[in-house]
Image 1 (tube, helix red, strand yellow):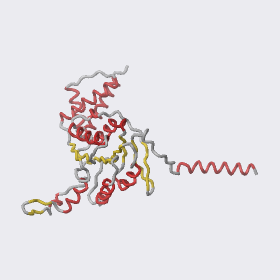
Image 2 (spheres, one colour):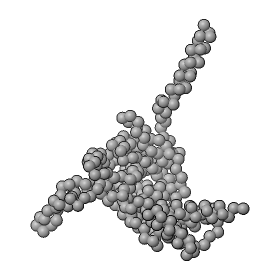
Image 3 (spheres, one colour):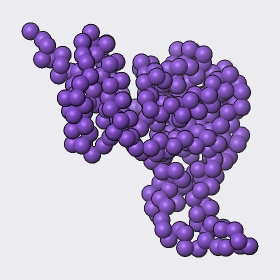
Image 4 (cartoon, helix red, strand yellow):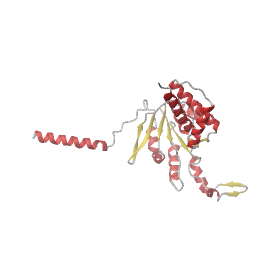
Amino acid sequence: MDSRLNNFLQRADEVLTRLEPLLPAQRVEVDWSAVIAARWQREGRSGYLQPLRVSLDLDLNDLVGVDTQRDQLARNTRQFVQGLPANHALLWGARGTGKSSLVRALLAEHAKVGLRLIEIERDHLADLPRVVELLAGLPQRFVLFCDDLSFEAGEGDYRVLKSVLDGSLERAPDNVLLYATSNRRHLVPEKESDNENWKHVEGELHPSEAVEDKIALSDRFGLWLSFYPFTQDHFLAVVQHWIGVLAAQAGLQWQWSHELEILAIRWALGRGNRNGRCAYQFARQWVGLALLEGQP
């Protein structure tokens, strides 16, 4: 009898071992005194906040050449952190120009005084009421961050999202704010045909209902910040900044030169991009290669 029981328990243990990876992980409540960032994860018809490990090594001074945008969002965030009225913000413009980096740098700036960041994907924004409910009454200040918020032609989701944003953000507690980035100013494609039905009324130009409907989504954000493609001088200034930062961290002696400038320009031309991300990638490549060649 003992041998049969032991055999049964052994087999049961083997079955449980095989099934355990398939079972959902046990959810624990996020300790916001120790966690500074989380991501909303969809699970079935509900979801949960998954704590994230984030680096706080990005400084606001690392955002070179976007001083106006940086200062405006920094002021808005300081207002929010201090419990003052602040606006939801839409950061739109060319890719790789520092939109997401600016939000991360602001987290690093204000994490010690209670700012927290929650990433939420565009497809999960319908869960905003649930997320807001979890955050209401907490002492920390939460920025809900949606990166690359946009919609393609033919998608009707933006109308649903518009109503969700209205309902969630209008009733959101004062410790919740939404920051979003997008490559499009109005979040949806704008076609020439949208302008065909504009009307002249008593000398004034009135947009069509289709245009009004699309613009209404971005109107949910009180603060619009525009990010434009880099000029060559702007690009090279960012390259110099990042080479200086990375070289200082590695103890590398270096000097800006005409040859280095040409290498940076060729790097950008080879990728078809002249933006902050491209500048940072070149700096990493150049500093890494300089350190490698300097090894005995």
